[in-house]
Image (cartoon, rainbow, N blue to C red; front, side, top):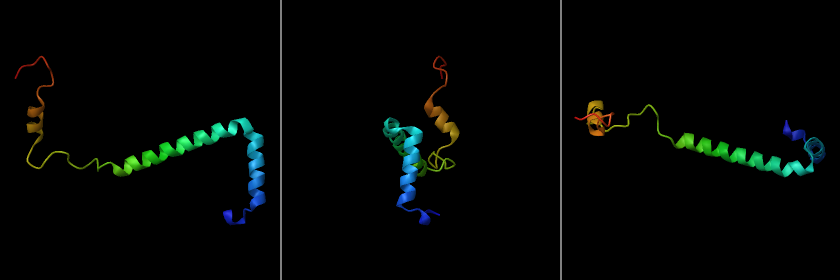
Length: 80
């Protein structure tokens, strides 16, 4: 599809973009596009680095009761 595009086609596209947005708005448009791409890339990287959410996070020897006891009471006024 892009094989048939020549330099003239890109020049015409550039002129149309200039007419639609105007020359003063193009730097802001390019800046916002760059920021959007940076955010998109960081989100993609953070998703690929995160561990499996279904994987168990506790060590093999402890149970949920042990973890609750070591964390203490949920009500700070309650005494053990």
